[in-house]
Amino acid sequence: MKVLFFCLKFNLKMKFTMYLSLKNSIVTMVLCLTFSFVNAQQNVSNSQCRYSKTAEGFLMVLREGDNVISSIENLVKEQQIPSGNFTGIGFAGEVTFGFFDFSRKKFNPKTFNKVEMGSLTGSVAWSEGKPSLHIHGVATDDKFNAYGGHILALKVGTGSMEIYVTVNQEKLERKMEQPLGANVLQLPCVKN
Amino acid sequence: MKVLFFCLKFNLKMKFTMYLSLKNSIVTMVLCLTFSFVNAQQNVSNSQCRYSKTAEGFLMVLREGDNVISSIENLVKEQQIPSGNFTGIGFAGEVTFGFFDFSRKKFNPKTFNKVEMGSLTGSVAWSEGKPSLHIHGVATDDKFNAYGGHILALKVGTGSMEIYVTVNQEKLERKMEQPLGANVLQLPCVKN
Amino acid sequence: MKVLFFCLKFNLKMKFTMYLSLKNSIVTMVLCLTFSFVNAQQNVSNSQCRYSKTAEGFLMVLREGDNVISSIENLVKEQQIPSGNFTGIGFAGEVTFGFFDFSRKKFNPKTFNKVEMGSLTGSVAWSEGKPSLHIHGVATDDKFNAYGGHILALKVGTGSMEIYVTVNQEKLERKMEQPLGANVLQLPCVKN
Image (cartoon, rainbow over all chains, first blue to last red; front, side, top):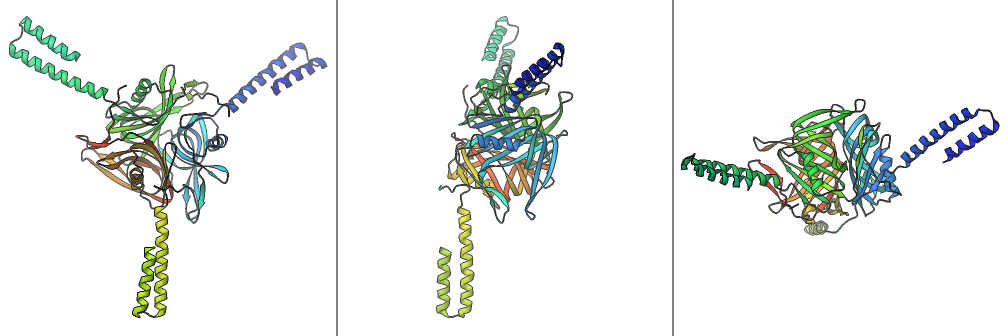
């Protein structure tokens, strides 16, 4: 709407100052409205819902370029999901796996491009007031070879990514455990 | 039952027209009844339940030779599942994966035989009045090597295939999106 | 507590019988109390809850050294789960896959050490009064290569293993089917 308003104002100014012929003015107006329309379309696309409520939780459908981890974190924050787990599939433009080196207490990373996600499996919890995800996956390339492990980063490629989230009503925390050096999902102790 | 009725009618006709001796007639009758019995057995096997209702949806157990995709499509039609997702495992006699070539807008396929399905993950939706499935999987061979991706075809091998379906009550459609050339699950827009 | 009581009793006996000097007695006491403390710690760790109730079933978080199969079997027995299915992820100290040789009716096994479980997928049923699990998985090594299949044994490695269980209220049995030689999940026949 702002762009459209700018278009009208810009064109009116043009006409008043008579720097352009009527014909040029119409061309500018058309170009400006086209830009405004494309811009509006993109806004729809950006604000377009990425998830929908289901019987057990949420269904996410992410699009090319979407950051999968921050998209799930946004869902968790927006819908205040106390905890949960999910599976998923889709096409990744870029996925980075990390294999944890317990002696150095850090992940050795490797990135794969343009791969199918044969499977995505993970859980939702919280840590220090922020969503804390744990995701593993198996990626498959154009030769159908499979690679995988703990996911550090994941971006949707050409196509889409579907995530099926099951919500649990109990708020759970993930906590860095020492001397392990690993982030572990904490369970409330249950009497059997 | 129809076959049995045909047997009796055929044999009676034979006897009335006296083209065959009583002995031949009995042989024909026995052969015909055997065929009828085998046929009935197959009917039992075909109509044998392949799925059962669960708390969240359905459990399918498919048998050797079953086409996994059309079996799930049958479940979706018979039980009018509006949408859903599933995971699964089992032994595949034959699985065909396809890697989408976005420039040619078609799948490059490859078939693997006698492999375990290490994982199956997918979703159920509808497209032009018919069930529309999206399934990814990871297959593992007798050397435990893994291959996978988008599944184009899947037939159960010696053993069985278990599919765990979670049903969602909202009817969802899958739509071919241009210029992407990919079939994308459409979400109803939800206000947060 | 029993160990502690034994320590005190043992030390008092020592003093009374005067076989040991005061110094030796103290050393024994310290060693014994240390053992008692370690033992108590292990008891806490053993009795520490390994699972928690969720909306759809149970969430398990297993720790280093835990046997995944017997841990899930314990959950199934303790909570009397009639049937169900699960997915999961985590770090395996040791996982053994088996590829079924239908001519010999036995599994050819192979063990992988220190691998991420890229995915775990399985089902819960009963057989002859005991829990009967069917689990497939995909393991990924420090080079991110993937291996997998039917899981015969699985032990948690450094870190943890998360299992997300969905419970179904209908009790299901798994039965060895001949001449197949495979253990198949039995469905109750449902009329459509």
